[in-house]
Length: 108
Image (cartoon, rainbow, N blue to C red; front, side, top):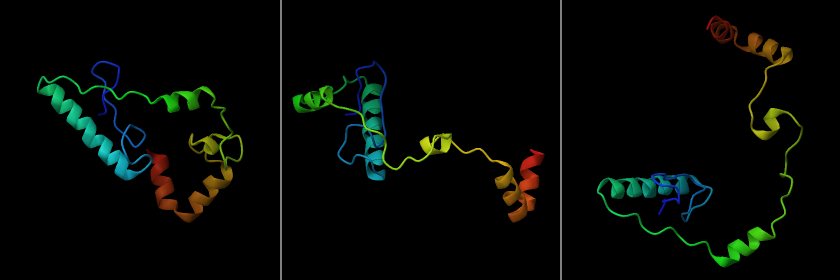
């Protein structure tokens, strides 16, 4: 179930409790499971019980030490998925490679 301890709050995504973690299949299954929770509530039925967290997971979390992410280079926003800032060099390259698109974007 995608039921949460927060009333009327249902989650879906590849990171939720389902059997295909971190994949498109997991995201799809999680959406289906979340829709089932919502449909069940719409019918006036009680939520299924929330899954109990297994003790070995609680124990592992208690001793967890965070690590630096692998492969992250630099300190800029792009290194952490925060987007990209176009500098003068990139702007010149965009203008040269596709002037029509560049000018259209400026006009907006």
